[in-house]
Image 1 (spheres, rainbow, N blue to C red):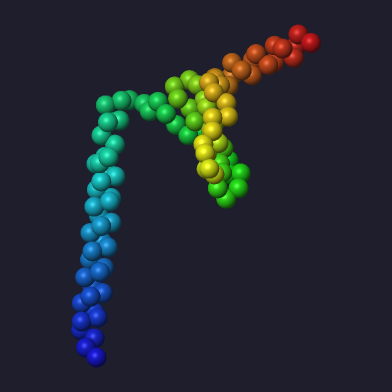
Image 2 (cartoon, rainbow, N blue to C red; image 1 turned 45 degrees about the vertical axis):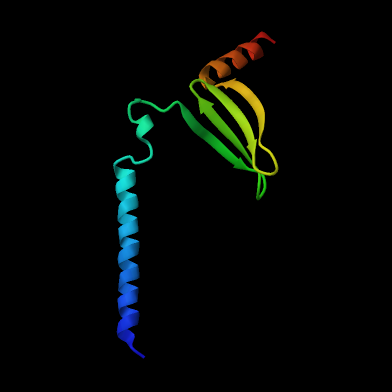
Length: 103
């Protein structure tokens, strides 16, 4: 058998993997694919928390601006469990403490 062919093939494969990795790193470094968000100072949409329920379904808490939405994703359909919850936890806590103090 001619081991030279195997060695050259292995080196060529390694070079291709390195080139793909370098292109991916450059794409992330210089923002390829995220050009629309470059002009904004802060993102308006974020995933706050993810809770896996089983192998297929997850509860996802998503924040947009100052409101939060609870989503059930996976399975056969996606579902909005709760809409428009406030993201201001300090104000919510103060309101709950006032209600407890009034009792």
